[in-house]
Length: 150
Image (cartoon, rainbow, N blue to C red; front, side):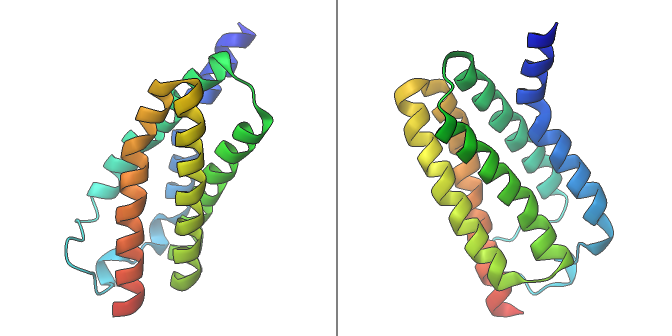
């Protein structure tokens, strides 16, 4: 029973925390009021994409942890998750758009590190993070564009 609870935690923690942060900041989201760069998607796309990415992230971590327990990779996983969640607060509530650019860059570095490490330990875990890294790069583009245009 304890193992099932731990596995549930590993898979669903990102989406649970993402949902909590999303609920807490929902009134501060000013995305539609910002001048946006080309290719900026409508606001409705974000909760859909992030839900999918958080589930993929959780499954990736769960599969990796079934056979691995490297403390550094565990730390990096949770560090990128915390930074990911803090980005939302920094961008929307604090409106520190330049700082949020640097946070995304750091998240990208951490996720690339995880992809490389997972590739050597559990390839499916690395593959599951590829949509996340692609979305992070796109989010960086949006963040830079919003910073410049606003």
